[in-house]
Length: 78
Image (cartoon, rainbow, N blue to C red):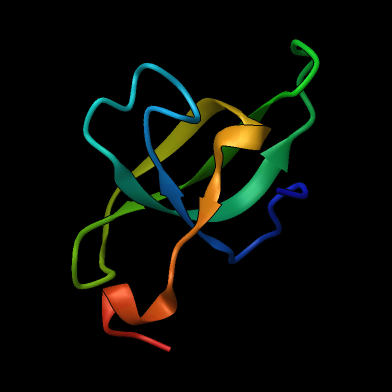
């Protein structure tokens, strides 16, 4: 996956980081420019519920190769 962009909807699971035993939907606000390990990034955004409503604002540390784009129909929004 390329670097996520603002507004992109992601499906974040254990393939992105072991902390996500239970996968989440995540709407990206921005990619943080913090120094990190090669292939890893910090993202700021909102964890969403099944309807696409924001539950909580979060910063997450994930492996870029493990991120997946989420289908927009999964949230009921376009």
